Image (cartoon, rainbow, N blue to C red; front, side, top):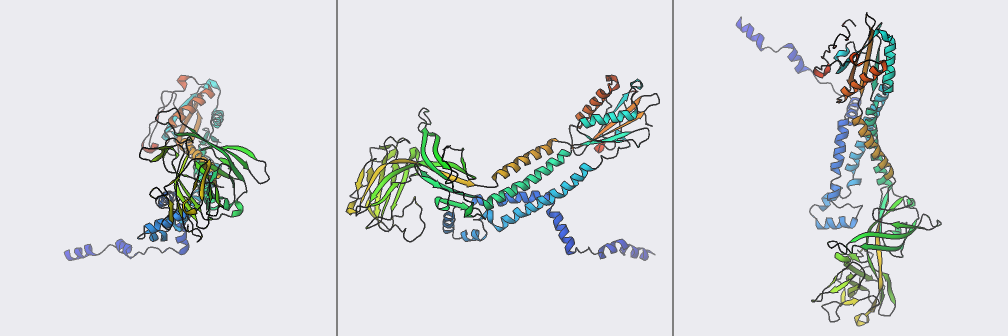
Length: 573
């Protein structure tokens, strides 16, 4: 007998055996696609992709980007031969146009659309649907109260419910009156649909921002140009010193406007002790033309106050001095004449100067030195700039001759000169010494190589030119996103039910309840406001409008409210 019992205990239960033998259903391709679409269009996935997009943009600030400056990327790869090419294969020098960044961007775009469209359809149906039916026990709601209309007021229950409907409509509720409850008519009211509308506007605006940014990256462009006083910039590809086009940029997008720098003025601080000599204001007077046939227009270009032309914005980003020089070669011919942009290097507009003269004969000439707006010389013979303004301008140079390497067609930096393959003519450590010129001075180069004259000084400005067709739309959608977010945070979805009945002594008994969809800390204040409006509508005195205290149980579902005083409704009502 005991063996049989043991055998029965060891044998597996039928249910357990069935579970072990049960096989999970296999998803068909269509079902798999439906599951993948559900996962992609969930709000959790959209938030994850948004975070992933922000993380994916980080390498763009850690490594040089090829669209901005290809030469820096090339030099970076040369300086880091161990991992430079690996980073290039991972497209870390072209982050924002890389395949993996574009994939995240497109998936986020699809996910947001998949989230917004179904929610918009569901919300549209909810706005057109009727308010929920009136609960049988309003006392279970989080906010509950009663009112009593005296018999001598002559207000039957049906009129009271319609009067309450008018009050709630004025407060912005969508109201439905129900007279199918026999002697106890009721109404259901609902408001706060703007909360979900704001939420949808927020997510739709995010899609708009993504589209606007994409349009700007595809069709926009940017460039830089240095303008010396008197120079004119025409918006053509050859007019830029540096140009960065969008992915789908076409040269036909360039509108042929022009901008001429007439005068540039800098105001320096001459009063503050700690900031004496520092620039405090920059003003560029320019003449612009929208088209070649348009009339000229005088405008002022200042920092953070761009000039807008042909859908582009021209920003003032830099400035400095441009010494005017005339260089003659060994045959006495003018090999170069005009301004030379001096690159700022230190305080008080201490600037480096590089001059390349490939047309000089019999040998090409090169000059390297510095320009001082207000030159001072120490006891050791070292020159420095004592003030940023032009009180004592001085041009100090070393000269070289030989092959500048420009005839080979290789690009060079205009602010740098490789002197390793050149023969020096002038330097402080040579017998000829260095070249030091004041405005109007001329220096004859050794060995009959020519001469250089310092004719004067002009100012120059650096301008950034940006064209982004999606910029305005991105701003509009960003503002809409903020407005939608604020609306969704501060508007609450609320429902109100009111039920009326007639007491046997002729009084009209009114009970009402409020329920919020989600957490609403202002629901009690809304209940007090509704009670006050109903009391004023029916001209009830204070003792007839005493608030019935509500007691909330778990989630407000098991609370029971007992009417206060003899004016409360009876159970059978």
